[in-house]
Amino acid sequence: MNYSYNGQTVFQDAGKKLSLANAYEYCRQIAKHHAKTFYLATLFLPKKQQNPIFAMYALLRTVDDLVDLAEDKLTNGQLTRGEINRSIEDWKARLKECYAGQHRNDPILMAWHDTLRHYVIPIELPLDLIDGVAMDIEFTPFETFDELYVYCYKVASVVGLMTAEIFGYSDKKALQHAIDLGIAMQLTNILRDIGEDVDRGRIYLPLEELRRFGYSREEFMSKTMNRNFVDLMKFQIERARQYYASSDIGIPMLEKNSRFAVLISRRNYSDILKAIEQNEYDVFTRRAYRSFYQKISTLPSIWLKSAISD
Image (tube, rainbow, N blue to C red):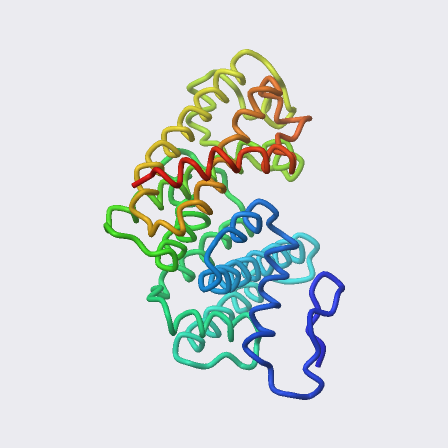
């Protein structure tokens, strides 16, 4: 059997039993293709931590892709909501089997099962993520930030909690700060992707906050740039930065050889907020991003910070 990803054969088993090394390589290719900043950060991890992180990413990415595909098919009338629910429940069942020691010769689940042999990662975390990404299938706008927070926790913070178990930490307080980093990153994603989400008919920012700043849903959906929108964006950026600031407290609590990778992700994600500001808050027609050169140029200062973060 051939195991392909993104149209390229990652490995061939030639009728042989899937090997663990091939399973991890399959996961690595998924991370390399989909998550450039994330993949860059993982390259600075100790070798023993890279494979578990690749397995985690591949697992979460597969769930995300499953939901995206289900969402498209629901929109096009190719699937019913009941069929989608059964598909999601089937994936949950496969995950539970994995935790029980079965992986159906699936490369992602094989790699994840091996990861679970070395790290204690509660099944509730990936199950929460499945529930979180499933919220996007029939999306309902969030009325309050408390509602948005739950979504951000499920789709992002649980990843931070899983990662923390692989990285190791000296104080359980690190877990709350890992949650905050997930919230900060997901808020950053939401702000960066506002224009694309409008094209999909979606508003992720809390409706109560739109009203507070005197900016209507109609203005949002028509991509209206005005003073009220800029004030709304400034408020959102400041909130995200507060969560980043909280996450910084937890990074010194991680095992030292993991901090550099976390700092890379934290820095490059938070710099997206600067890019939004440099674009004069126009997230409707301009996508804020960090170039590869900009990401690489931050490495010396990030390394220094990680080296003195005891």
